[in-house]
Every structure is written in structure tokens, then in C-alpha cells.
Length: 305
Image (cartoon, rainbow, N blue to C red; front, side, top):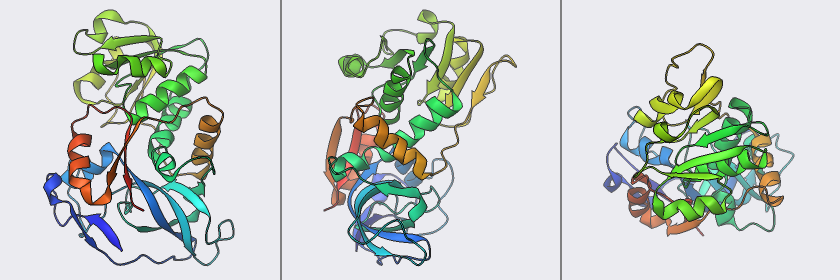
């Protein structure tokens, strides 16, 4: 099969496009012929060794996909060859920048017929991460005020809409170029981070969802009310200044229930499909350069077939 892989950690230039062995379906697994695979910030961090050096090469990155089941392993009864599915691989066994992937059937679900493979691939990891952050970790409720940092990005834009759907007042940060986009997703207040310091214009938020990390993450507690909750997905959760402030690292375990919740939210209209930019799989270097720039609107997706 054709795949994108790397033989050492480094910049986008270490990504190679070429032949890799076809995967096989072990017990409890399915092999999926991938039609589309998503690009996530986690991918360039893995490629660069941002968090830790990669231990085994060649390494095929990529965590979410959409495609068609082409083989079924022993013990799998809920899928058959020909089923259209989407899913999110575990972070220790990524392998989605490829024409095929073998994956545990328990963390895959059927793709709605009305979605294209590109659309389904764009939703997996961002939707899962937003759901476990907004619903599980932050436990957002109607009437609360929620700050979502970096609202134009894939995870944040899903989280913004989910918080709004749950009845919260949602504030977000973004560049001026993305202000209209996040307003179209339901943001009640937009802060241009190039012109305003959010810590100077906000206070007493019930919850903060930080997708940015760094100093921005550390400043979350300056706008959080006592007894509030903050969730962090880009790096470790900082230590809060008060014991009654919760600093949380959401549990992003792969579960089919999260994928089914994505389907429910999007098909009901509660969450809109993201703005999507597509690349050929062979153009992975270019896609990573854009992803690493961190000023994304929506999602980047590889069209594999």
C-alpha cells in the first residue's frame, strides 16, 4: 500500500511517500481501505518528537480516517466487508496516513450515508476531544459562561458549538480574519487576540477550554471564577492558584460511544461540519507546514482515494 511515513524525527521534510506493507486484521480488528484521513496538530508533534522521540521506524502518523471495511478479523460480528466506517486510532498505533489501516473494531462506527468520507474523516479526533472536554471534564451546563481559546481550530470550533448547544454563553479568541467564522458557529463574544488581552476583558468564567497551551493556558485561571473548571488539551494541565479551581486533562480514550455522539450532534444540526481544506496524501509535507503554523480555520484532510 501507499503511505506517508518517516524514518527519523524532524521537520516536514522527513515525511516520505512510498510503499509500506499492507496491514492484516488480527482478532477483534477490521482492515479499512482508507478514503480520507485527517491532519491534526498531534501529527506534527509526533513527527517532530515534540513530546518524546519516536521509538520505532518507519512510523506512519495519522489518527483519524474514513473508509470501507475490506477485511474482518476473528470475533468481529458488528461489521462486514463493504461497510463504510470512520474512527480514531489509539495514539500508540496511529497509521492512518495510508491506503489501509488495521484497527480495533470496538473503536470504529458506521459512517452516515449522507456524509462524504472527507467530512467523516474531519470529525473523528476533533469531535471526540471536544466531547470529552466540554461534556465530561468541564460538565458545561445551560446558563454558564464558557471561554474557548482558539475558536477557529478544529477541536475548538466543535467545542464552541457543543457548549452553545448545551445552553452556555460562549466567548472565544481568534484572529480578526476568523471572527466572522466563529460568529457563524454561535460565538456570543469574540476577542481578537492580536488586539486584546483576554485577561483584561474577561472575568468570572464558569469554564475555560484551552486548546492553545503555553502562557495562554497558564493565564486561564485569571478569568476563571472560584469553583470553576478549566480543561487543557495542549500540554499538561497547569496548577491552579486556588484549591477550588479544577485544572483538568480530559480523558480522550477511544470509545465508539464518542463517535456515535459525534454522529448525533452533527446529523441533528447541533454542530456544523467544519470548513475543510483537502490535500493529496503525497502532499503531506505541505499539509504539515500549514498545520504547524497554528493559524488554521477548520480542518485539513487528505483525499486518499
